[in-house]
Length: 607
Image 1 (spheres, rainbow, N blue to C red):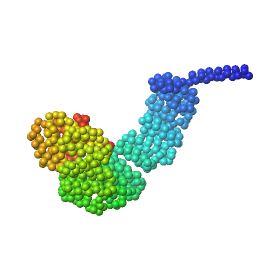
Image 2 (spheres, rainbow, N blue to C red):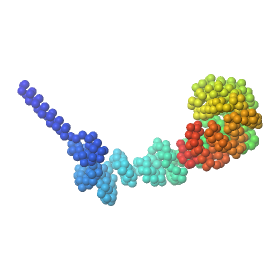
Image 3 (tube, helix red, strand yellow):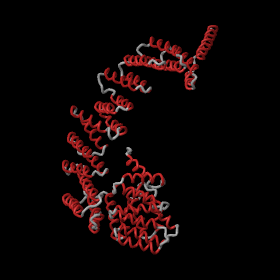
Image 4 (spheres, rainbow, N blue to C red):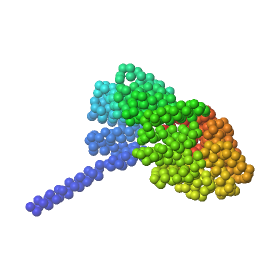
């Protein structure tokens, strides 16, 4: 028994040594890959050949790498023998024919290469993974036409030309064939409606303005024979991309009625049109909701509010408007409020009417009365009450009732301490202190508000903080600053003759002060408020050219560019100024927006 155990132990030792010897003879795949990456193809080929033999041909990878080594070593005869041998073992493996085709390309036989590639496609197994795998091989080698043939044969195999529609669309996109790209993107939407958003993203990214006409033509053709609501959605979307909101509205109306929707698409379209300043299309969209959906619709009151807001913007953003136009709009507001009363649903409309009275009809007492009554109504949303209080405080300030104004700002600041409304109220209260000449306290508040999450508040706070610091640390006295701040308050109150008189006295009393650029800048703002845009532009230009090193230079350039773009119809000059801002004033708070506007005017697609 003991002898028998000794013999078994000896045999195990021998077998262990034999196995170790076999393991030592098997090459390391990582070493082979390293040789290949280093360009040492001869060494790599030897190792890959040994790995193939050890693997007994179970993996394509080692043969692929071995064959590529032979191609890189230009051992084409050896490569041809190897691939023929492999094809004999696996005659239905399409990848081997692709490798054979690569060899023919290397030795300058394109026709023979094409024949091998065609054979690969013909030998492709009738399953989804095989189709995609072979197409990927062709795509990775930029053989897009062959990849297209692969997917087309895949469609034939599955008797569904839409099966690989998205892949075909992407290939035609890479080939630059826009009509075919669009054709297959539309097939994708037809086959997989869930991909509509993906297709829209791709079209928005790659179509230029002229190519949207091709998309629309194909959609119209399809809609004549195929009643697919996704195509109507895509057609409407294409009009929105071209800022053609009128035609987009026509399509969305059809879709809204077809699907029996409450109007959410049309409400969104109206907002997009309003943002693009196509007020006629926006108003038409809002009116559709108001007239077709009725007062029980969830969008009804918002649509009514925004429709009147668009009418106000359409009137007031032009060069001139008449009192009659303002009175007509005022009557529309009042008629609506009479019909639906003043409460939770109509609070925003009351706020809009108050703005109209204060800023355009110049009836401050009526504006104050409207908001004073509104804030006393029960059941209003707290944010709506806060907005009404801030606006009411603005009107009190315009009326010269400083105490009432600061009281309301403080109430909102306290209730919404860490929210945007609270920051806005705090900023306005600080600015009120600045108007009254309390520069140290107001500057401390502006320094805190520079970190506001609101870009507008942050920029305005930074601007005023720098302005105070810049002028109080120079030869400008506190008295000069106080006169200037008082003039600013008069401008805010629309008391322009008094403001100009105060600014003239500032020039006379303190002729050497550092506020000369600020005086011109404030006067330019007055002319802009009075809609004398040429005069405003002239003063902004003087500030920018005469005081290029002072803090108002970038403000003036940006204001001038905006006037040229939006009021004076000189987009090319505006574009030049925007470029100057982000190049010469890269640290300006206007730099980012100036770059964006420059790109829009240049014709770039800006998200």
